[in-house]
Length: 252
Image 1 (cartoon, helix red, strand yellow):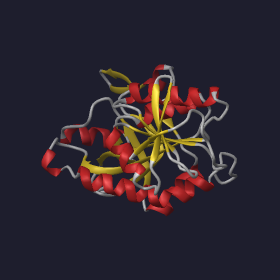
Image 2 (cartoon, helix red, strand yellow; image 1 turned 135 degrees about the vertical axis):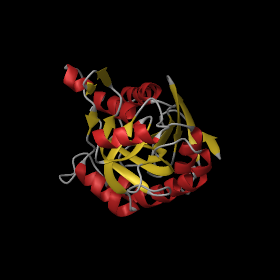
Image 3 (cartoon, helix red, strand yellow; image 1 turned 30 degrees about the vertical axis):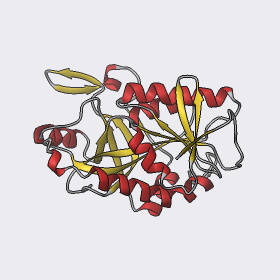
Image 4 (cartoon, helix red, strand yellow; image 1 turned 180 degrees about the vertical axis):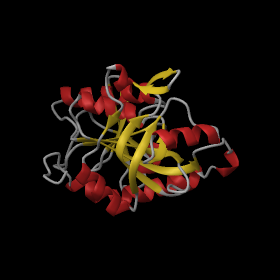
């Protein structure tokens, strides 16, 4: 159930948190972790679902790093212009897991959010954009928050890769794991969300529920319903951590 919210309505002293998913079904899975219905709030360039009583704002930011970055940046800008900026952005949803470390139904929390395909292919192999002298390819969520999220939810900490193309072969999966030995999961939005958050000076967290193995594209092996259920369960356990966390936490 979604209600209409009055613009600017805020009645909580908890830190303002934005949870960005790719698609509405992921957003709704997060919303089910909270007992009260969300209220729809239109802001320039985006539509938020606001949860009451200290719950986060939810955003279906779109598929892929570019749209996720644009939508997240619009929400962050609107909040800043309202004089109520967000203290944290959480990129959340389902994703592929690298076997055997992240099986279907498990949870992964990113201690590194890395763009897997931002760079250049050369005769000597792939070069990340940082080796070309530009930008960044990795964002690091607050270590204390990652540890608290892992403890609360049972998620395994590790690298979550962001790509514009979902892996569909065993060869590509092996190549990614060779380049990123700590990679546990891949998705398509985390790095874009992290880039938008970094531009606003806001910390970021990424949490993924594994719906399928990274590798050959076998839809019979996908467990999307199971992964969405795991995402809901994770946010039920994560909610107290988010409510109590502050960006000035010395352990954050």
